[in-house]
Every structure is written in C-alpha cells, then in structure tokens.
Image 1: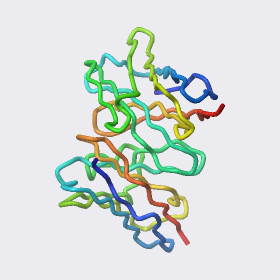
Image 2: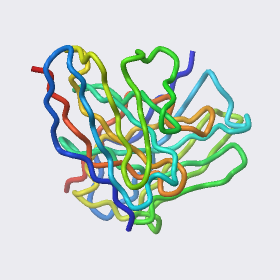
Image 3: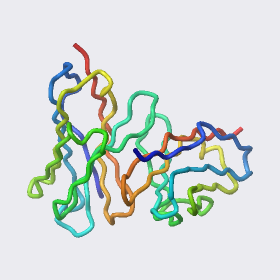
Image 4: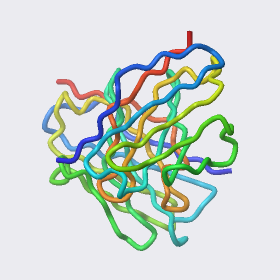
Length: 105
Length: 119
C-alpha cells in the first residue's frame, strides 16, 4: 500500500526557516496538501495543490513538490507556528503522512 | 459560514456497527466539486483518511478499511452518514467530518468526536 513518510519532529529557532518533508513513490505526480493541527484543535489546510495558500494563511507558508518529495517551508517561523503538520496525497489515495511535530525554540 | 458537526454514539462495544452522522450548513452537496468525508485520529496518533462522497455520488474509500466502511449522503437534509462495521478497540479515535469545496483539499473540518470502543 502507498505510504507517505514524514520526519517525526523538526525544530527551528524563531525567525528562521523550517522545512518539513513528505516522501512517497512518485509523489511529484500528485497534488499534495498540507495541514496544521494544534493541540486539541481540528486540522487547518495551509497548502493545497502543492503550493497554493488558502485565504487567510500567512505568506510565510509555502510548498513545493517534485520527484518523490514534497516540502512545506515556513519562512520567518513564529511561536504560533508550533504544531503538528500533515501532508496528504490528494489525487489518488488521499492518504496522510505520519505527521511532523514542529517545535519552535 | 460553513459548519460541520458530527453526531452519534461515543461508546460502542466490540463487533458492533458504528453509525455517525455529519450535519453541515453553509454549502450544498449538490454543488459541483463539493465532497464530504471522514477522517479519524486515534489518541496521540496521526490522521487517517477514511472516505469521501462527492456531489455526483462518486465515493472513495481507504483501501485498508474499504470492506468495513459505507458512506451515504442525504442532500435534502445536508447530512452525510458513515457506517463502520465490526468495531474493534483499535478503532477508538476522534472522528472528523470534513468537506472539500473545490476538490483541492479539505477546506473545512468539524470539531471531531471521540468514539471509544470498549466492552
């Protein structure tokens, strides 16, 4: 079965750039979404179709997808960005990755 | 304003069938591109996509759970119903109802409801 692999955790200092990867076989052939989930809350869509931001999502969130890896990049990371992040392959399987806990310290 | 709310039992016994209802407002499931589905999340674990039904009755299921899942819609009532057969303690999770308004990702999420499977 198809799987998406994310690093369990990523740490970043405030103001720096955080990159979270999502790997899967030929993932670049699909559209990828990214979701942010804070403790006790429902997930929020932050990137769709690899690189587009929904209304209300800050410009510091960006995405890319090529080959076997999609990447969520958060530029100028803020403390409020500390959360779990999940990638999702949207076109075929719609599966989620295992999630990455982003720590801002 | 778009809202989705899950309802159903919070406790089920092993082998029972779980039936959850999603009642939504602010959009119509007869609009092209719109879909409503279910995602679950065991305590402390990752999201798992379950199923989605589109405005045109196209349905998609998680391959690993397909044999146990059924999703239906009642457009007139703005409701989507999920049934999961043969429940097991490993199915204990927060179940989220969610919607895609454009087919490009899950734009809207319900608050989720915790379903516990225990005898």
